[in-house]
Image (tube, rainbow over all chains, first blue to last red; front, side, top):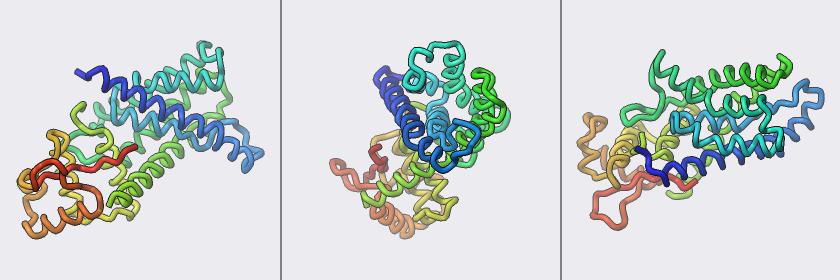
Length: 184
Length: 97
């Protein structure tokens, strides 16, 4: 049984990470993208870092990631859409954002092998990337259905999610590497 | 899964990515010791040299190689000697994030 303070810490860390990654994506990366891809057909971000946060959180926490991420995802929608965050389509978007990745990890565990952290397993980063790609496909389809956005937006969402996951993992890898070197 | 340090798991995952990109600075023995230490440290506070030596991953590693690799891991910051404990107890370093 998970103690309450541990759950609070998980919620605080995961939700803060999601919200910060979202702000960075929408306030910094997307405006830069707009400068370089003026004629790009979609307003979707091509480097959607929050996808990395939700996939890594789902990998680490499993089903608990739903609770851990929910405040951060809702806060992001509220920041972007205000009271429209309560519209059915947006609420569906929030549900899709928190539910899909843990379901994908569970499905992979049932159909192939469990790639979630365990004492007896070496973590497999490309398996996590694979789960992230599958999650991106499912999230893209469901989010487009919920929002009723043009089919072409699906590809932009997909590219943004996959690149976002890879770049976030790359950033974390370099941060850990730097911290390790600094402490030696 | 609550008994595993999340930061250590994330670190191990990204170490795999580092290795795949050819950036890793650990030898095979160092990596095995680090994984064994991560596993043992998630069960106890700190890990004893004797515990590491008896780990399955150390089965084919000679004692001199083991101690050389252990010292190297400390120098590279992966492990540190526990300051308050007796000698021979190491902490797995999980960076503050």
